[in-house]
Each structure stands twice: as structure tokens, then as C-alpha cells.
Amino acid sequence: MKSKTIKVDYLARVEGEGSLMIKLKGDQVVDVKLKIFEPPRFFEAFLRGRHYSEAPDITARICGICPIAYQMSAVHAMEHACGVVIDGPLRALRRLIYCGEWIESHTLHIYMLHAPDFLGYADVMQMAKDYPDHVRRGLQLKKIGNEIVRLIGGREIHPINVRVGGFYRVPTKHDLAPLAEQLKWAREAALETVRWTAQFPFPEFDADYEFVALRHPDEYPLNQGRLVSNKGLDVAVEEFDQHFVEHHVAYSNALHSTLKERGAYLVGPLARYNINFDKLSPIAQQAAREAGLGPSCRNPFRSIIVRSVETLYACDEALRLIEAYQMPDQPAVAIEPRAATGYGCTEAPRGILYHRYRLDDQGTILDAKIVPPTSQNQKMIEQDLWRLVPELMSFSDEKITWQCEQAIRNYDPCISCATHFLKLHIERE
Image 1 (tube, rainbow, N blue to C red):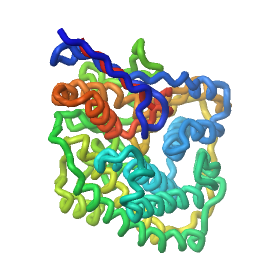
Image 2: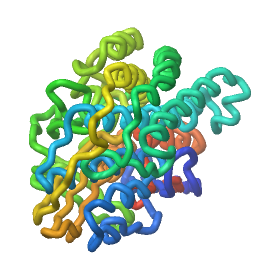
Image 3: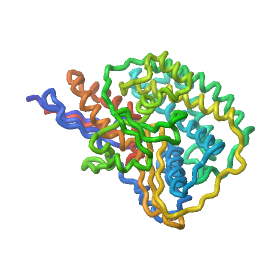
Image 4: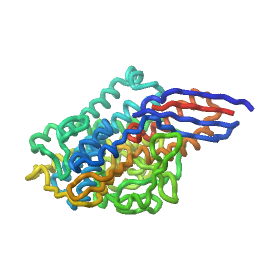
């Protein structure tokens, strides 16, 4: 039997470092392993013995793309442990800074990392030679998302203004006014992004995924909600550990998270969209329908359109929040630590991000658990590749590699978050 080995050392345009091994025997796939080889980062261990108030600034260092998600999950978990609920203008301000993170992170992935796949370019620098106006539009959109994070968070990367109970300083309505003008342009640019990505060529690749996302009764989920799936899961965040389990696998430094007795599941924009389409704003729903999506989408390659719809939603929602904003009387509410366990889960751009902390009565962190979206999606990425590769057997090794990388980028995996770039190894027997 003819045997062949294809090895690609690094997959480009993902965040972090990893590799992929695919083993073929004849026309059968016999093994797929997504390997994350970045060294363990030990953030959970760093948190032990630290004061609860340090968690937002420490966990923000886990990711330079989505530090707000880590801060928000941390503050929600600490406030849950201390019996505090943040509402009113402070809650709205948290939702606004989260919109900023969605805009900058989604735009980075759509324009810089994923669009070159669909248009046949090696990277955005090559794409920019033929699509200079599109790339400029993406950069300007990202800049506006960054500006929201900077203005509320104190700086664009690893912001420093978020604290348990609220913020260290809150903006005035006058401070936010310039953002409103920028967001009016951003909303139109995001709408053009939906129309642009809807024209890309997509393979037929629908699958019966179990989608898991937060579900809130009144709003498209960012900070709060119940953990809901399209196959019957509907539990409170504090029940996460009763329904989800993490596994060590020998070939990866990142844990695999699965649903107990059900296996792989999918989190992220596609899951949020399928579970919460009815909570999108009218302009986002209309744009999705015009892009041919409808209330449900099961093709992961079309996730680039869904991200574009969520970017549009985030621009629209940020504008609404700014127009309704009233400066709170105090930048934060008082927190009294107590011995308790707190749970928090928010919607990072790539999917649900779970935090759990156990505190003593002085507010010292005794134990911490953080489950990022990429760990939760790893097993489903492998399952997608098990299904995809047989359809590619007649192609050259170069094209198989390109398609597999594209399938992985559908997920916008943040490998650094999970441990935690991709080296691809194809072995044919």
C-alpha cells in the first residue's frame, strides 16, 4: 500500500503555538490529534494565596486579545462568592467594555486571520495588495473596539480599570460622546463586513453540533445568563462542574473539556447565534437574513459571517449603551469578603469562559479553576477534521493542509489561552 508523510511545521494565523497530526491508511483516516505544545502557564496556581481583588488584573494577563473576558469572569465569580450583584449603570458599563472587546477581537479574526483563507492569500499583507480598502476598513473597526476598551479600561491591552464591585474610575457622559460618532461609522462598516463575507465561497459542511452558550432572558449574552444547549442542557453557571469535565490527553498541554456522558460540544459565535438569534438587535437579524443565514447555521465555515453579524450587533449595542448612559454615583460598590466559593461565566469572543474561586474569610484565594473556550472546542475541532479529511483525499497534500488549517481557523482558537501555531503532520500508509 502506498504510504506518504506530509509535514507542515507551523500553521499560520492562529493565536498561540500548536500542531496537528493526521494519519491516513489508504482512504481512511485512522488518527487525528490537535497538539498544543505551548508550556503550561500555571495561572491557576499563581492565583492561590493572592487577595481576591488581584484576580481581575492577574487573569487579564492570560490573553492580550480578550483580557476583558478574563476580567469579567473573575469579577463575577468574586462577587458571587461575596454575595454582591452589580446592576444599573455599572452593569451597563461592563457590557459596553465587553462590546469593545468583541469588536476588536472579531475584526482581527475576520480581516487579518480568516478572510485570506477564502480569497486565496497566504496572509493579510498579500490580501491588502488587492483589497486595500477592505483591510483599511478592518483596521479602523478594530481601532474603534480598542478605543472603547482604552477609554473604559484605562489602556487597550491588559486594561487596569476593572475591579471587583465595578471600576476604579468611571467615564462621564461627555467622555463617551466621541465614541458615539465613531460607532455610527463602525455600525455601517460592520454591515458592509457582513455583506462582504457573505460572498465568500463556502464548502457544504453542516453538522449536528451540540451548541453551548449563555442564554439571558432579555439580551444577547455577554456577561450573564444560564448555560444552555440546543440538546436540552439548561443549568445555572454554578452547576458547570456537575455537567462538564476536563480530561488530560497525552499529546497536548491543554485539557479537553467535554459534556459528561455526551462528549464534544461547541462554544463560540456559532453556538451563541444558534441559541440566541432572537436576542440579536433588529439590524443584526436583518443583516443575517440578507446574508442567507436564517435563525440557525450549522456550517462552521460560515462562522466568519456569524462573527461579522456579532460585530454589527456589538457596534449597535455599544451605541445604544452610550446613548442611554448615566454616570453612576460611585465607581464601585463595597465588597466584604467571606469564606465561600464563587462561580462566573461570560461570553469571550471565542465562547464561554468559566471561572471558579474558593475564598477564605479574609478574601484569600484558596483554589482557582479557569476553563477557556479553546479547551472546550478542542475535541470538536478534531471531530471536524475526522469528517473533513476523507473529502480531501484526492487533493494534493498542500491543499489538504490549507483546508485543514482553514477548518481550525473557523474556531479562531486561542491556543495561548488554552495552555496554552500549528505544526501539521500528515502520515499516509
